[in-house]
Length: 147
Picture: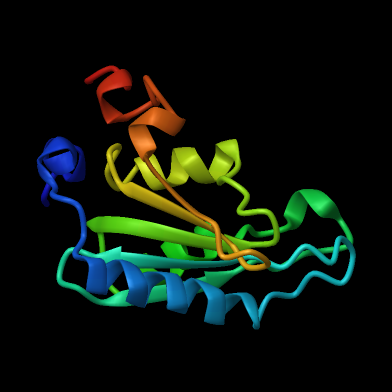
């Protein structure tokens, strides 16, 4: 199996065309969000290393701790589809929220230096950061003792 962490710093930024496709997919995914409690609708889209886009949205639960964030929904969908290496993620919300800590850790499992794009769906403001900036010194498989 390929070690997804070994390729993290080698990836080039996605093309402008791929970034626009990714952003549009995240905005579209937001339309499917289930957020009857907070009314905070979030869409996410992952760009795989072969150029495919996998979408996800947040799915709330009355028991808030069971809520699934959009980023983790996208990761789970991608993994279920056989993908393990991601190039970038886009997250669309009001205000352009950054991924939460749990989502940062889940994303880091598949590459600590992903490109992270956030989009404010109200004013169109976009930001880009590397995941390693958002989660420096992430816990990884190298932290687990070998047996």
